[in-house]
Image 1 (cartoon, one colour):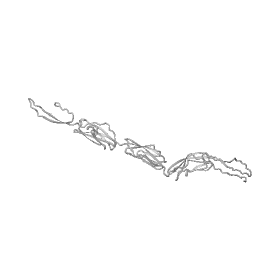
Image 2 (spheres, rainbow, N blue to C red; image 1 turned 135 degrees about the horizontal axis):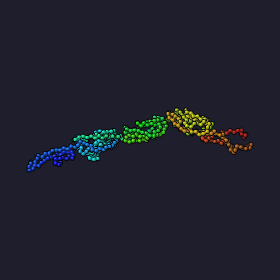
Image 3 (cartoon, helix red, strand yellow; image 1 turned 180 degrees about the horizontal axis):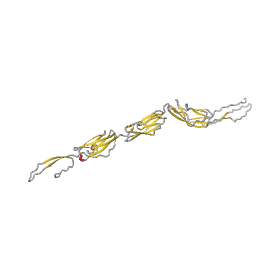
Length: 362
């Protein structure tokens, strides 16, 4: 204070005293005291980060500092609209500055969009600041099993389960032809036609992140399913009766011949699966026979080798085919044999039989 002027540099209360000393020509004046109260200006928010970070549910979050201009202090604060788990804290309580710095901090326990309103009040007035907070869910975690079992010919289903479950989209890759996927619900469904393993790549995604899971599907045949257990090769001979019946187990079954045609002279039964007849054509034939039972189909490859007609055996005798004998002299013995040949596809040679004409008297 100088002369008759007063410079106010901050809020507060002070006492002003006016006095005048007496002199030769006048007496002393009565001392006058007055109290001066200087209030702060109405609150003005000075600083706050322009970008509000996105919070993650159950994750640590801090936003700030939020401050008032120095001429607005002292002031009191209040806040409404915060998500549960967040508080309005001073920097001194967080170890991040003095008591004039404030933060929104904590661990939010609910997701959504929240409009938090910060109110600053002093003796002069009130100011508010609205802060839009977005709390996203945690990244999904797939909680359903990584293995599933299916039965050929029976409906199969599997549902992907995740936590958290809201706001999640699903996808699947490497699906077998029999399996379909509902991306909205995470449902896999279908009916496997045969017993073969599959690995499906599952994914669950939300705004925060994604999770993946390889799902191993093991498919087995039911007890009444057709399963081939017979040989893979059968041989026959041109001109000789031939019969081959596949073994796909027991139960009502229908059969079909797939692929190559039968050799001339043979027929196929759709009731029994048998290949029968008298083959007329030499060669090697690759067949595939399918059996259907209880809605399931299995097939097996069977090779059939048809040998050429067997040549007549050629007789042989030990010591040659011509022998001399003398009356009254011991003769022989002579061993008879026959030369035969096997077919090229494993047909055994025929067993020879011998017929002897009239022998001279002993």
